[in-house]
Image 1: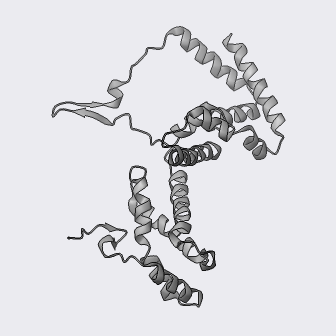
Image 2: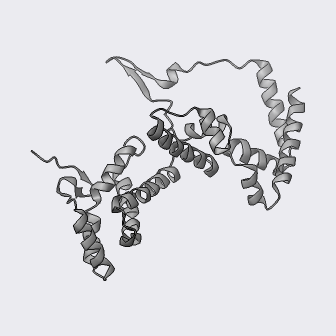
Image 3: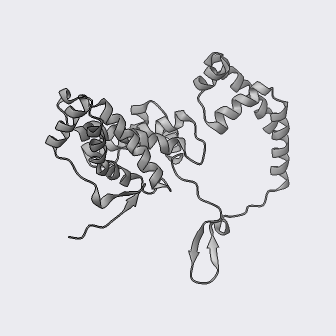
Amino acid sequence: MARHKVEISGVNTANIKVLSNQEMNDLFKRMQEGDMFARDELVNGNLKLVLSILKRFNNKCDNMDDLFQVGCVGLLKAIDNFDLSHEVRFSTYAVPMILGEVRRYIRDNNSIRVSRSLKDIAYKTLKYKEDYISKHGVEPPTEDIAKELGVTTFDIVNSLDSLKEPISMFEAIYNDGGDTIYLCDQIEDKKTNSEDMEIKLALNEAIDNLSEREQHILDQRFVIGKTQMEIAEELAISQAQVSRIEKSAISSLKKVLK
């Protein structure tokens, strides 16, 4: 059977060697005795493990070369920390470490800045879903996930939305060989009436009249998406103080909108 050559980061995947369990054990023993060539062989012999994991992320990263290198970092960490005495397969130990490196890279290089707390909820949700599906064969209800993680259903939906890649307004969505239709062409343009404009102007003025600390807390809470605890740690004040300032600022804005 012909072997198709695929190059990623200069590596010809058709020539990657796959090690047997005995070969793996022998190489780990040699490496632990100080043989660095054995370490190189372990890396080269487990590259297909990295590639198999990267298949899950084909649609989440434009540069698979970069992602492959990140996966190899996880592989190296797994090799350097693996203990033969635990009597588990190396792949069982390595997969979570490689996945962790890849997910961190994708999370930290997302084109839209999302708060860490929101990302944490998203990845905990995905992990819960994965475990639930493997056990029950169906996806769990959003309400059950929210209860399990101690958050609201809105937090679950919002966190998963934060992982989606943004789409350009000028993304082509249809082309029949003639004029191209772009996403912006399909978005309804609702004209702003004078009453809406007056409300916006009044609201902007009200925001300008808030103190810098009030503006900062509202921005961090409702634009950035941080929790009150995260803001409290940043400002070196208590969460109760953050809550009071937030409520006071919102109350001031509500008076404008009445």
